[in-house]
Image: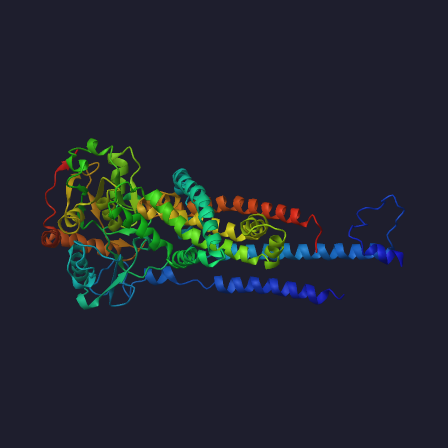
Amino acid sequence: MTAVKEESGQEDPAGMPDRGDGYVPSQRRIDRERFKRTRARRATSIAALSTLVTGVVLYLVVVSAPGWPRTKETFFNAQYAREAFPKVLEGLWLNVRLLLICGVAVLVLGMLIAIARTLRGPVFFPLRALAAAYTDFFRGLPLIINLMIVVLGVPALRLQGITVDPVLLGGTALTLTYSAYVAEVFRAGIESVHPSQRAAARSLGLTNRQALRYVVLPQAVRRQVPPLLNDLVSLQKDTGLVSIGGAVDAVRAADIIVGRSLNYTPYIVAGLVFVALTIPMTRFTDWVTARMDRQRAQGGTL
Amino acid sequence: MHLAPHTLRRVVSAATVALLATAVGCAPQPEETSAAKPTGTAGATCAKGKLATRTSGKLTIATDEPAYEPWFKDGKPADGKGFESAVAYAVARQLGYDKANVVWQSVPFNKAFAPGVKTFDFDINQVSISTERKKAVDFSSGYYDVRQAVIALKNSKAAKATSIADLKGLKLGAQVGTTSLNYIDDVVKPTQEPAAYAKNDQAKSALQNGQVDAIVVDLPTAFYITAAEVTDAKIVGQFENQGGTPEQFGLVLDKGSALTSCVTTAVDALRKDGTLASIEKQWLSDAVDAPVLK
């Protein structure tokens, strides 16, 4: 009976033969561990084999396609890749700056709108209505049209003191659209916190504002990290759309070379550069999320 | 032994994936063959009305949408009005296809040179011939000698420029993928990075809004813009041709197309008998005089 009880433990006794307490795993347990290991090995090797076969088949299918030499020349030309890379990187700097500045602006504005939408009390009705109208409008308006209106339309008004810089105007348009999305993410997060939390906070004597600040928002923000990252990655790619105002970002830099050479390789280069930018960002957020989960789990998992 | 069905299922599913991929992937389109085989005769003959076109008996001609003046009139390539529409029909006639047998197709500039099956026989879209582009597509011989021109608002400081040096400090713009943009980069070499627009329309509104000091377009387009679209703008001047060889627009054909030599022969014949010159006179007669920037 004792052996059965030990088996239900979390640790792997086969990996720790002597723990100093005189425990010797039973034969049944050793057999079971061995069986588990062989099964895991078998699964890994089958997965590897299957992946290899799929990879080889895909490769052969692409390479043996009748148009492959032409496709290779058009999309994977080393000479144009070398030529495009520095120019694409130069353009990417614009994307990165836009991402950082618009990202911060979007988070701030989105949070303010979300809070405005979740305010209680009849006195706040106009604010709530305004925030709701804002999110409805800018979430519905296609980003490209928003950009056209702001980048090409606003300067046409010829207002004194309003910039005509397509990058600043484009950044404004991006912020308008994305803060509407992000506001909804925040609102969903705020509303996902159980009302009992707010009630408990209020019963402890916290004001509405304090309850929001110290009880609701910390819980809400934690749940929002993955969807917020999603929006951030999306924003990063959409920063390229400011090029409709003539600004040369990574994609437009590739466009310029494509137009001259009629070779698409620069697009591949630009695409890979964006992917390379996104992957560290995703890993970083995974890490942040995991760390927050660990902190939350310190009180014990349920 | 209770593992066996499990493993079996894995192997079977892996095999299915592989088989599916093979089945889907190995159904290649018979692209090169159908294009390369002219009906009946050998590749070099250009028998009238009997070319190895996409659709037998019809000539499919492509251009971008919207189609701009003065190259096309009212955005309707099929009405034969406008310089390029007229040239296209003249070439078609030369190849033995009358107006009823010409089919127009809308193909974006960026797609016209994509590898794979072409849906058109040739594309006419103010595409300048260059050795670099010849690596990607076939060109007919040139049907129009083009020059690039600078446009600026009449009351701006850019309008007073008389030389290339005067343009250096300005914010210039052009449509992406055009030789106009190359002229800015290679000839003017401005101190500020030029703005690159997806369409000439956006370049025009940027000019009107003061987002750029001047834009570069080809000369006939420049005459049309200043005469009809942005009337408070003027042509500052035109560029000389680079390196002596004139820049020319050519008809774009698929790389290795069987039609290239026939179309080239047709264009050459139209140039020789004066047809091109008279079409040019009819549709681009304004585009004669603008100061040359040196």
